[in-house]
Length: 617
Image 1 (cartoon, rainbow, N blue to C red):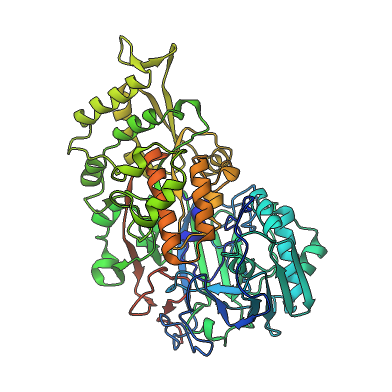
Image 2 (tube, rainbow, N blue to C red):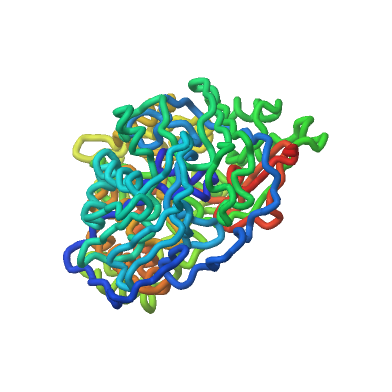
């Protein structure tokens, strides 16, 4: 499956990089003032939104790594499609699959803790109890790959560059939330937060900005928002080594990496090189994997997983096939309705079209029964709405009772429909037709649904041949209902262009949510960002806007979770997408050249981060 840019970074298994666009939007008027004592200054080695950090200041290494992992060797993976840029932040072009690897930030997230982040380029931080500001004290030994020092001036430059040339929604948000970033000296940088806005996630946001070389940008005149085939130096353990456009990228470990002895880096960045091979489709890639052209494959095709792994190298024991645990939230994926289109404005129409997707038949017939049907936007977590609302969740919903249908407050949470074992479930066809007629759509003499003399037209768009076998039966079912449904597959570059321009009716896409939510929800579900990258459906709701504020203002994990459950309940009722399937595990196959920790952390497979080569010496 082709991943959109909004989900690409999370799919790479990179636990050590904070995304540059976490989706902060300004808090509305009337937001709560910070509480606490502004004269009480806290000093810490990291930061956690709720509660205490898991790791103490003197930790030797992360629990899930092998601190004695050998250094050396190569891991080789694959990516689908093409690339024409080394800049992952450009609004145009296609950046290559590991383009974020060279860059670090002040704080680093970890794969066994939901909200904790720890000093990386920053040695420690200080902030008042009110969290009105934060000062990061940086490690003076930090350097870029060209040998120049990483300074507070680079941090301020990077922050301002994102405001000037980053995503407009990001710039709008951060300008309102962080009115001042200043270098106090060469290795101390202060961020000041705006008065009257919730403090949640602001310190983590400031600490997660990727750091770029001010000198390089000023020397080259490069822009952050342009597609380009040169790369600014980063301070991370990997740097660009070589490339063959649209065929191969090789990253190499920087032998002079400044942070190799840090506790947070022990047992990580173990490969000398990371090679990415590019293929037009997954079938070609699989054949190349079987021949050993690349050596690590994370499988996403059930038919390949169930039937394809019978080649000689696997039989000989040269290739390992494993199902590994995955404690991360499954992506909230499905067939997304483009709510900017007039034919999808009526919820009854969206419900009817959803009824025509047969998960049971799809899973049993096409996916070997390996998947489960997704219900929630926060599946299998404490943030998933269940049953009827009660307690804090009901209290939050009471606040928006005038903005939502009454049944949301009283009825069981909406769950996907059930279907029979035949592709076309006649019971669901009848229910869908009733909904369409209730919405004013009636079949003509040929069975086509008509309203005001017009038929209902729905085009499915994809750039991935693998999706043919899932979408075409759905299209056939819609045609049986009387919908003028079509399917168009385009090349990856055209798909990227049409996806970004919202030139589609329905696509397979979704929302990347997390086990702890905060300000980033504004960019995914907030009205002010309904036409931005991370809200593919273009969904907007004043009720959800209000509840997002409750998430941001939450002072406890319990309040945050209850507010998210209320949002989940509304999103599911509104049917902004047709939920499809999820898999609570990793399917991986690799040539027997790799070692990994015996117990993996819950939130990251980590193949590029803390696995190692058994051929390393």
